[in-house]
Length: 234
Ligand code: NAD
Image 1 (cartoon, rainbow, N blue to C red):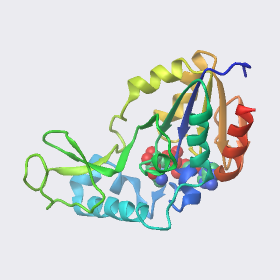
Image 2 (tube, rainbow, N blue to C red):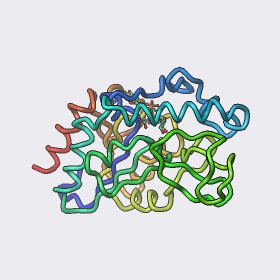
Image 3 (cartoon, rainbow, N blue to C red):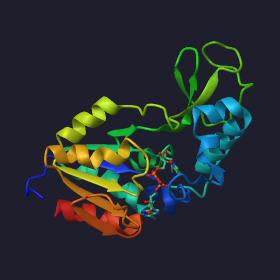
Image 4 (spheres, protein in one colour):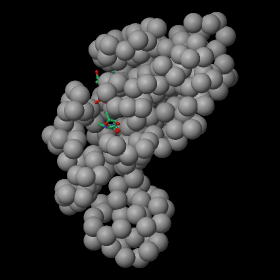
């Protein structure tokens, strides 16, 4: 890795929030909180059974807002690094929880949406919500029921902020992926984009994902993320 570090991009996945009490996906094509992803994380699943999909995300939101779920040392380390680092820093998360912002992260992009937001299917306007909502909830803009969906990017939908993310990847010196299985495209290809401009690429994960990173460190995020990022500031 070059000795001068000017620009860092970090990608996080469900693994960084596992020790905060939010379950990850179980392996490729696996289950999310006991539900097949096709049921709760695809546009077709929403068309087939909207009731189930609303209830699934209502449960995830209630869990996220419960007293037991809070940021862990991996989230707080990234917020502190962003504050202390003098170069440019972008945090891209695949997570739909709000643990990075609760830890204090600022330059943050949620590429797969957010649990605490809902979107109107007519106007595409996005609203904050900490409450349950369903097919019967009246939309704040069109004032009728049946138009709201979770502001979540489902499989086969286009992730958010891809232009900004690609620009940052193409100009960074260091790319670090934390707690992501590398099963979900396009995030799984970010390390390759970063490498085009010869960025150094690092994986911090519980286990080897088989991807071609320059360096790999294995262990729980709450331990290895503080160790790694503190070493960068020395
Ligand atoms: P994934 O579940 O496919 O993979 C999780 C990865 O984290 C695995 O490689 C696993 O080895 C690793 N991991 C597990 N516990 C860890 C720990 N304590 N420390 C370090 N690493 C750990 O997750 P993904 O790659 O993010 O893809 C899943 C998709 O599911 C994402 O798009 C996301 O939107 C969604 N999801 C989000 C949440 C959340 O917001 N917290 C939770 C579950 C799923």
